[in-house]
Length: 218
Image (cartoon, rainbow, N blue to C red; front, side, top):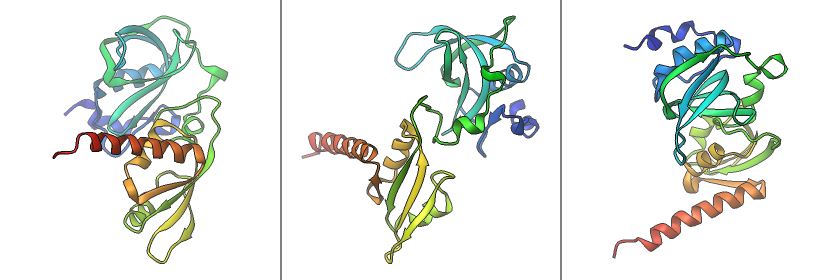
């Protein structure tokens, strides 16, 4: 058993260093120990990072927070190359993580993870994009699931229908994970507002339908 499995309960969740779901095993979690230590000790780190669509490149990062989402670990920190906050998937890190003797930069002297993530699902954060009211109609097939496992903590029930369906509201920023989450419910969820989110869901559903239509078996 990896030492992370036995020490997760000792991580200082309430200090704002780390957030994990019930299942702590996720891609490349062998890096979590040393990154957690780097955050706790304000240590700048360097590592090779390879996004899915680009070549591997050395990154110098001032680490702030570790988050597990959808069975993947992510590091959020100040990226010297971009001079801004960036999110790094741990399963895209290659080789060893090297600690550096550099001055640790922390905007405003503090990073508030609860504030940073409160209006989003997942890890994709668009600076300057406001949170907005999202209204969703849910069929009776998925209503019990959504009631017992809310899409987000901002979820509120607006209306209950005689057929078991519900209309709910959320207060979130429109991001990649939100769209994917809603698409996962298929025909049982309809976005009523805002119009931009409803249109994106519609377009993606249309593209899926076209792919199946063009490749349907004879």
